[in-house]
Length: 233
Image (tube, rainbow, N blue to C red):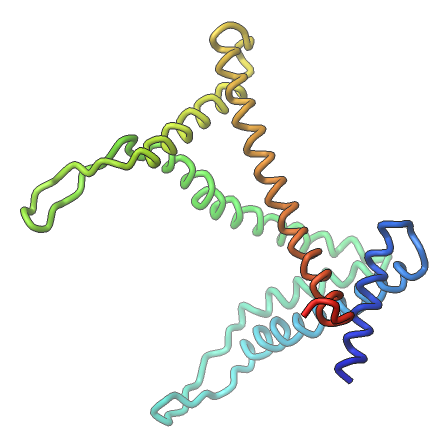
């Protein structure tokens, strides 16, 4: 049975890779199997995690036994009914005549999600980046526990260089996006330095994405050579 599973996995892997040559029935079959299995898998996971694990157990909580052997009962969370109603209304999109009702829960979800993500990203991304640009440049004062007095602790050369790059890159990048003044002279030169930092950032981000995809490719090649063909041991 294990060998059969390996051959099926190899068949589907080669079917997906065959798209590099051209679109073909082998690729379409592999793609349909992958999409179908993924949809079925996530349907089961979401059912047990959300519908049963959160909604059903939240409305009709089960009795639990703690480490001391006492029975612990939880109060039902009837606020979950609001989410159940909104989820049911979204399914009305499948009925053309009343499908417009599904826009109400969709608008509610998008609005709440946007507000939640706005606060999270404001604190995690924006404020963290602002904090990183106002850190001490060459060192900072620390409390010496032996003398209970503040002592200046200097950064290493590598840390100072990193701080300078961060400050210069942030400042010049902001100058580039300042469009109320024509980019000429010293201002234009500063903006060009900002473009340099921005292109490095985009390149590093793109390279990270490519490397993550390459890791998937290496994993599939490793499977084909080691597990399937046994050419490399």
